[in-house]
Structures are given as structure tokens and as C-alpha cells.
Length: 204
Image (cartoon, rainbow, N blue to C red; front, side, top):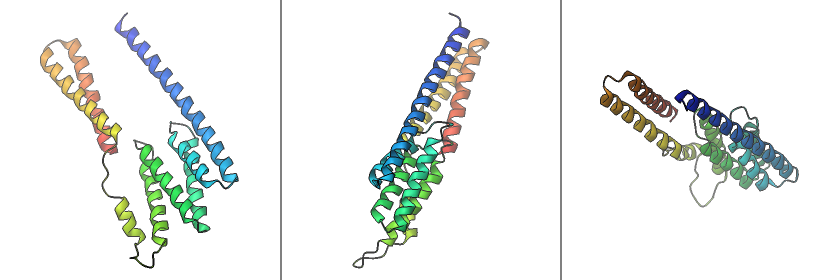
């Protein structure tokens, strides 16, 4: 089988896998939103929050359900704050933060969602004053939550793979010398590694 046919077959397999994963995540998001709404109608806030978080984490390009999951979590948190239900508000904002960290990646908007969750958590926690202890301000809570975080596992793995691709491609170039056809492949591998490394570094 020629290299061209192998490349076409690999591309078709990749497209099929992406389509299957996308369809699955869309179905999960749709179902979780339906269950979140049903639980909210019964004022079962813990159940509603769990399903809304699952929808927010079912992230694939083009799916509307993750955004609706975020909206449900934010609404539950705000409504709980308004009626003085601090426990539910903390649970909702905590779920928002967990979902943001679970969906870290380029273009996911996780930074903005995490900041929204942190603000909600800090606001509610600061309002729960303990008369026997010191009062913690919302600003202090935010500073504590926004301390330096370790890189996500996917980021470390991608950086390592990109570095290996660059090193391997450059070593292959040095070894091949004048073999132009193979040198182009090595150049391509090194270039892909460099681009992947740059993208992940910028996204961090």
C-alpha cells in the first residue's frame, strides 16, 4: 500500500473517531441538562448541580450543552445566594470551579469560568462570619484560590511529546545529510513538534 493511501486511511480513521466522540459528548450534554432541569424543578439542588457540572464538562466544539451547564450552575449559585442558602451556593460555585479545571485547554474559556467561580466562592465564604474568629475578606479568599497552580497532565504530556518530536526530527536531519526526501519528513516532524510546543506554552 502506498504512503498516500496509508495517509488517506489514517485521516479517515481519525475523522471517524472524532465524529463518534463528538456525537457521544453531545448526547451526554443533552441528557445531563435534561436531568439537571428535572432536579431543579424538584428543588433537588445537589442533584441539579451534579448534572449541570457533567454537562459543562461534556466539552466538544459546536455543542451548546456545556455553555448551558455553566449557565445552570451560575443561576443555581446566584439564586442560592439570594435566598441565603450558602451551602448550595458554595456547592454550585465549587462545581463551576471543578468543571473549569477539568476542561482546561486552548479555546475552552476555562480561565474566565474559574474566575467567576472563585469570585462566587469568595463572596459566599466571606459573608459567613464567625463571631469568634477573624473576618476573612473576599479579596483575601480570591488571593488564596488564585495561587500558582501546577500544569495540567495533558499539558505536561503534550510538551514532552513535542520536545521529543523536535529532538527526534533534528537528530534525524543530522543523520540523513543529503537524503532530501527523508530530510523533508524529518523537517516536518521537527516543525510539528515546535508548533505544538509553542501552542501549549502560549495556552498555559
